[in-house]
Image (tube, rainbow, N blue to C red; front, side, top):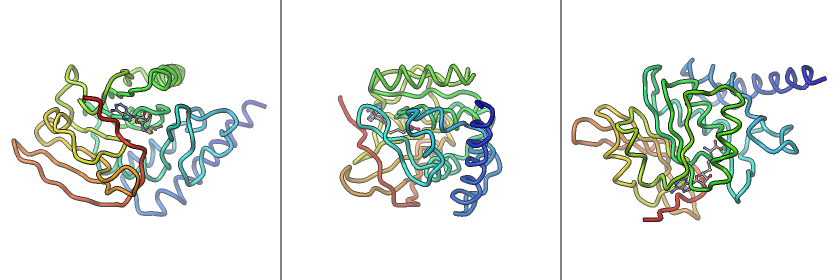
Length: 216
Ligand code: SAH
């Protein structure tokens, strides 16, 4: 019974990658494999598990959302994560994005401001054996200085401007992927690359995220 359910989720997951992700042009083989591997249905409420592989975001608790699968893949591809990279995620939410990043990187620190979400995500990640992903409950607009510098920073909440702390915590050659724009409208997914003390920005896709709360 449980086996049959897992097989059904797996079939849906493979179809999701083919149609929604490869079908829209994501082609990094490691990203595609990560998206085929992470059991997204484990990161949503049981009542939503049947919708976990559909082409849209889903509600999680605390009024937040788990991003659409395609956007998770697009951001991971843009961050160009290598197997030796140290990654910071801002906005753990369900923990799904952290699991995808953990499939790609050497280590992931994911920061979430809601204690309840941070605890739940940490639990699921541990149950699934993601020992290289660590969830921290704090204000991610300040990054997470103890783990810096990061080869990649992925922000999954909308910022009206790029928090300077996140640039400061990027390694030389590091990549920051962040939705930039007004919280109530659509934002531009933006890739910032650091080269020495210079940064280069490129906008590449309109998106819609919940706001990045800036507490300090
Ligand atoms: N990556 C998530 C989706 C996150 S939704 C997933 O895969 O499910 C955005 C998350 O960012 C929300 O959980 C929200 O609480 C969190 N967030 C918003 N502002 C934040 C901040 N300043 N620091 C840390 N987390 C923040």
